[in-house]
Length: 407
Image (cartoon, rainbow, N blue to C red):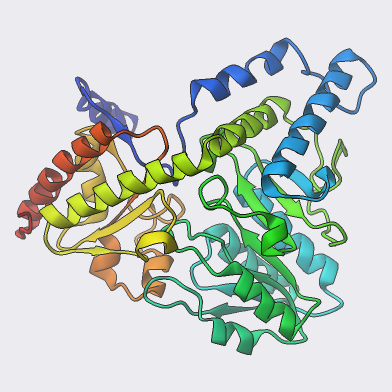
């Protein structure tokens, strides 16, 4: 196995241009974020924030100040509403399991959409072992939840609804406020959670404006370090801990806080919200250029998800018919263009993306999909290079399979 990987890496030698578009599965970290983090590994605030000495007090002060900063970006009332976790997956687990256990005497019904991330889907499956039941609400061909069906399934037994603000695979921006109003009208006691990881830093919102009870955000989705995320818990909402251990500056996730990663998360947030409108417009412009170039140069392609401002500005998900997605990612990689075929959660499994299936894509369309995400650091030169490489890669894969479709 390692020898095969070494051969693949050797085949990449001599690349003159590289464009990383696999931001769904991992991120590059800007030097400003790395430089902000470095002092906190060994120079200051390296102590446990609960201990009574200088390094501990420095850590406590740092964490409180940075929590306040992230609380501001989210639009929280208090910094106590921000709960750091090791990432989006853990925050979603805490939101769903913690709410289910705290509300188990009031009902056992959970409601989600068909296109939620794996860290939502699999948690609801786990909760079935504890007597909870999950209803999945269908979506239309662009990934928007059926609000009428949502209203029909929420009842007095519904303790939690979880609906992502922006879909991680196809970029659909859901009508969260409208959905929440429907849910609360049917059952005011139902807790409403949104995984806002793909909206934070890209789509303007605050938890106050949305009115949600719980919200997940992630560091690496905004070019911060991996291993850190947060769960917003509205003041007054009860969520049980799902882990036990030493309690630090927060009650819901035990253990010693990772100060350097919190610093990186806060710095990445600061950079994302600086010149926010310009950043979003830049990503939107490159997204439009990328999609227009693909559809103008390659035949037999389909856009997955909506167009325009109903789509996250960084997301481009395209199905290349008569072209296997995994083979295309390898071909593109050999030219220095790094994308993903579906999400990292499903790419090792020989089954189509559940999101693409939910919006009506067949097996061929789903398996020929490529997901690309754009950042504020990408340039027109990068997109031009991608548009030069993709048609050639598609043509080569289609030639191997006996199909062509490049114009």
